[in-house]
Length: 461
Image (cartoon, rainbow, N blue to C red):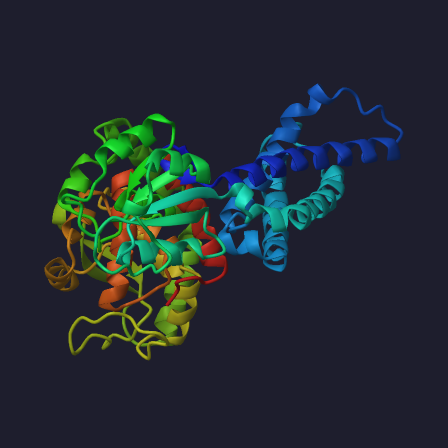
């Protein structure tokens, strides 16, 4: 994997993204050439239209990222990828039309876009047809040796067997006399020279998956392995990188303290994030005001009660604040006390179900963002009644309140909606990853992929 702004991107995704960008540029250029020959015009030199070509490729690829073209399912299934590509290219063309209106002369001609659109679709599907079987092969997977043969090693084995996994485990080494969980593990005593063993297997990374490190850590061997250029990682760090979440089952306070993350260089990032929140919330409030008013009327007509409702949530540093949303439930929804939403929740009204799926009920929260109580991106704010119990039952739950809550977040785009304690635990793992690795780049990635969640109703309830 390659680390970009503290976020890891698989080599296969980066390679495919680069190829896609080149193909989009080529499609735009061929479209220009075809149209120029049709009308008998000299196409001119390529550098003269480099800006329009770059805008075309950048906007279409941004749409591809937003709808999940580079997700694990799209990388494995050509049919899935083709469906997402159709949506992405359509959204890209719409965005180009807007840019053409705002900046005439800086994009391809509208007559070129028809050719460019079909050429892009054909070339992007073709490259996936050619590389589809290659992207998931060993050529793009890191060769990992696991030190340990217990429950943690078994978890790594299951993770490595997933089709979307970016690594292949080439061996397990048992470091204790305890009976191994991973049966194929070789005991350390059977290996004369661990450094040479690593070299012979062509290992690129060694992962420490020991259940108990005391008197079991081969420090001299690990130092020699490290100096040969092989990466050495502990279990928690490896899991964080591979899954995009902090593993609560194995993490401890010392790891959170000494691992990379929670950097002090957030002052500039936080200031830029606040400026972004103010500018975009003002723009959204102006643009969506007619939509909010329309659905407020529909909510009133659909069921008795106010169109909007306020609800207390826990925000930054554990302070409470009120969120404003379009009402999607009956007014007596919590007559028996606060409770999590359920699948096919009977308390949700007819209009409420629709505005939840389209996320329209969230639009009034832009006012909360403008006032500074929330951000567009961050952990989802929970109600005080739930927070009190979750802090008692889940370790490090209070740490998620060290960043400002958001309308969308890393947990929302990576984990389906759930209302159980186990769901809260999984979402906390993603929230801790966000709090630990926050950068404007990660915020941008989350904002883009929120479109995927909205379009395909992923997580809506």
